[in-house]
Image (cartoon, rainbow, N blue to C red):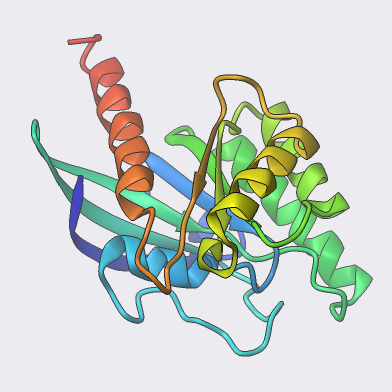
Length: 211
């Protein structure tokens, strides 16, 4: 899939601010400063679709983007959802609690949400917050795709070991997908977009009675 168009359609902190349902949604989550905004800009071919903040932990809204992608089966319309980062040490406990409530509300209220892609920094073993987040996603049936960011920072031999550690630490199932990506060197997007295409086309087939 090639993303032809991507535009922000809503910034939300509560359900009344969410855009109307009806579209397949693929969300992205990760620790603050894991490279989520850079990845979204890379995937969509937009330099500033998602803001790359110099102040980790500042994003406090759920950002919805309307997307048009080109596939071999024709154009598809869906949404990318940019979730606020978690795990930044300098935010207050009240902010952390607000984040938890916001996530639970979002995950339990969006009928079109099919998967949450979790980002982890491949240079480090997943943190306790990463583990908790993946267990959270698994509980709500939104797990299955992990993106290992900043892959350019490791040698190929190191990257292979890192991916094995991530898979073991997060207790990924055999069918769960882990994709190394470097937004800086522009590597890995094709595989992420392929997975996204399969999700969107599979859901479209379900909506059309499996045709």
